[in-house]
Length: 407
Image 1 (tube, helix red, strand yellow):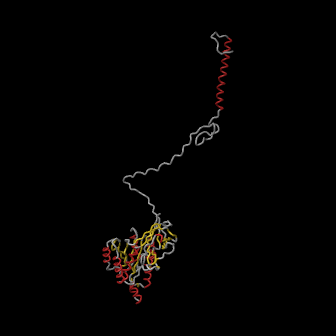
Image 2 (image 1 turned 180 degrees about the horizontal axis):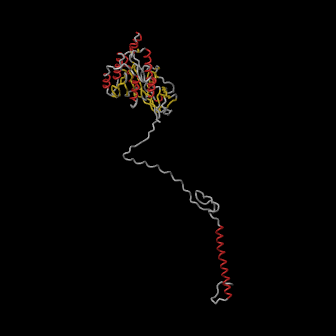
Image 3 (image 1 turned 180 degrees about the vertical axis):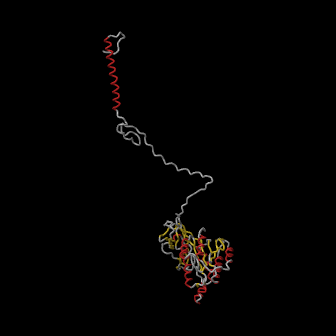
């Protein structure tokens, strides 16, 4: 057996040749083994250069029997809690945003033809229509002895003594029927409006203000301007307001035209006008005796019957647009009953509140209609104590002007 290791003797020629042969074999063997190891490493596919491996499933585990393991995918984290409310900084005020939902209040008066209030009606007895569309009544209230907030606006000018006398008699009768919780202001007009006493609950102060009306200064009766001024003054007064207008209805020199004052009345919120005409006895006397031109004259222009008829129509329109009633007494003896009826109408009425189905705040005028129905949905029948049918009337404003959004 050939061996590369021998005993330690002096080397012979044969031994030298044998050693050289073993060295050649060693040098030849080791390079070949290293090269084969490199070939084996090259034969294994590189994970970066070979075909891309399929991603492991999200739940973890291998795709097949021989594949890499994956860590299961984490579940989505729950939503973060809402941020904490910042602490109030001392010295800074609190601010908030309010969204106003428009509401419409309709004072409704239901009376017999004789003026007697019809009590005891319920919410289901009323139907409200806005531009022909029925509305859902949100709230309902009946009042029979409620305090009032009113302005007594009277015509007081150098026109005719009979007119002045009717004005004062009517105003005193109104003041005599006031109660301690009523708020009343007194104002008169000629060329311009004059406030005699501001809103007060002192009945004696109202009487004292009327006592000051003795000597008128001007002939002009600028009704339209005075009425517009009064509407502007009560606009910011809370609650429903009433204007008791004692006047001939004749306007002589106002800056506003009839169409402008009607537009202003339509845009008024929570205001009802009760006009009371004066001077009817003199008007009828002069109509029979052909002295109409002498009843009232301004700058030589006589006021004839047609002017008074137009004034009566305007007074009726003021009342109809706002849900009031106009009165045209022939004699001064009618004044006590008239003002007793007016205050009764104001204190005893129904108030309907609804949110319009048309929520647009475009400043448009919308017509209103109120109906009173029975349990069967048909017109309500009212009977007196004897069981006879009684005719009744529904008094409510004809419409309102929607608020306009500020752009």
